[in-house]
Length: 317
Ligand code: BDR
Ligand code: CA
Image (cartoon, rainbow, N blue to C red; front, side, top):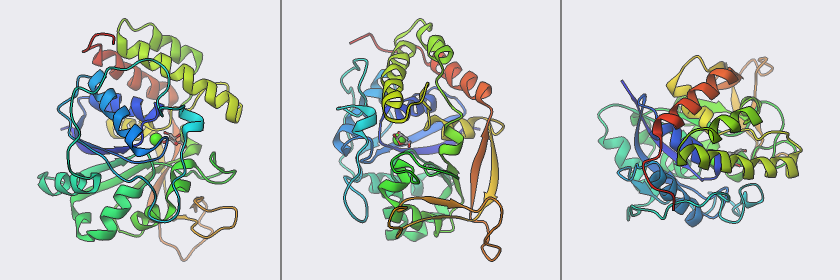
C-alpha cells in the first residue's frame, strides 16, 4: 500500500526533485503540499511548488501557503544558493492550478484529521508550519505516523559552520517537534552529502527523452554552480529527495536511534543539531532516528527511474 504523505517544502531545486519523486512514485500517496519561506520568500516557494506540480501533471494535489518567517526572529533566506526565483534555471510552465485559500497549518490539520490512517509528514524546509501546528493543536500528534525531515546533521553545517540551513532557519519549531512525542527521523547533511548529482547522474537526466529529465538536468547545472561557488563542491548534494526515497525503499538509508536536540541559545551555534551517536548523554533516552549511510547507487536508480516514468505530461513552455 502507498505511504500517505504531506510534503511541506520551500522549492528550491532539491525540493523540486523531491516533489517530482513523490508524484512519480506509486509507493507514495501525495495528499497535500504546503509551502514555507526558506530557499526564497514564501510567495516564490509557493509559485515554484505550483509550477513543478504543473510540470508533473499533478494539478489535483492541494497546495496551501505557509509561514513567511520563523516562530522566533527574522527569516533566513537561501536565494544565495537557489537564485533570484528560488528555482533558477530552465523555464517552467505557468501554474495550471490555484492555491487553496487555507493556510498551510489549516490544510495540514484538515488533511491529517480527514485521512483514515496516520499520515507521514515530510518536511524539506524550515520546520515552522509543523512546529506551529503541534504547538497550537498538540492532539494532532495522534494523526501523524512520523515526521521525516531534511535538516541538521551529525557533524557540521552549511548556512553557518555548525548549523544546516533548515534547522538554523527555525530551531524553535524543530524543538517543538522533537519534544512532541511524535516519531521523528532526521535526514541531515552527513547523509545528503552522499547524494551527489555527479556528471554521470546529470548525464542520465539529460539523456531522458522528455522535458522532466531535461529540466532536472538544467536544475542540477544551476544548483551545481552554486555549490561550487559557495562550498567548493565538485557536484551538488541533492538533499531533499532522500526523505522520500527512504519511504519508498527502506534499504536505501541506514538509521541510528539517538537522543537528538537542537541548539536554541548558542552564541555561534544556534540551529545546530546535536545527535548523540555514541551515548555521551547516558541519562537521555533516544527520541529520534538519524540517517547515517546512503546507498547512493540505489538512491539514484530509484530517483532517476521515477523521473523517467513520470515523463513529459505537458509541452515545453
Ligand atoms: C537544505 O536547504 C536548502 O538549500 C535545500 O533545499 C535543503 O532543504 C539543505 O541545507
Ligand atoms: Ca528544501
